[in-house]
Length: 93
Length: 201
Image (cartoon, rainbow over all chains, first blue to last red; front, side, top):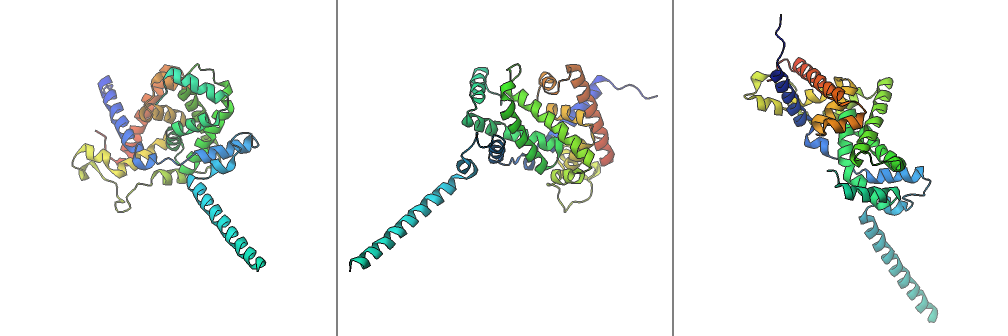
């Protein structure tokens, strides 16, 4: 007949399992959280039919995208200005 | 980290007014914990990401029903656990996800050490606990537990919540929570010892 285990034994077992769990499930790779916000905003936008988070551009894009689009716009405007200037001077002749 | 009570009240007021900036802050504050909880409960990163997003959508939809009877974090955890239970049932019915769960949680297994270490391989018990293979066994073992036991164990031993909070999240009396945690630890120890082929000490 096995002797009933004392409370101390149970506490020790509990402590061992707790430590083991902490070490195993707190591994750094399990903490790499993906960026959930864009996905959440997209779902809410779809569910609310655009009532919330309606500005899809600003919520879906990164800040870098703004810079790239801004620079591209400036380049296009400059090119258009130069092209129109050249056309204007040809027309004047 | 829960917000101080007064700050939380103001924050909830902003959420009730559907303040998008406040909601963004809420997601940023809790996304790590909710994703971590989902990953530990479900095991698959893809499922965990999908579920964690769904948790915040549910929070946004149901914030009007938040009465402030519990902490905001407890209420969010409750939504998360309920969604988790439903998804677990769905996955079990489909018999899908088992392998994926294990694959996702086993990312850190070193392929150069495919054999199981034994106590004899490792000089000190502390080293054994730190062994990647042991971690893998534990991560696998947790999915052999009853989901209701697993949720109490994860909330207590990983999320470090009080029995009271776990009771509020799961809707179980404190005594049942304690009993489930105790039994879950016992079951987990047995499974790990069986897979390891050694007694844990």
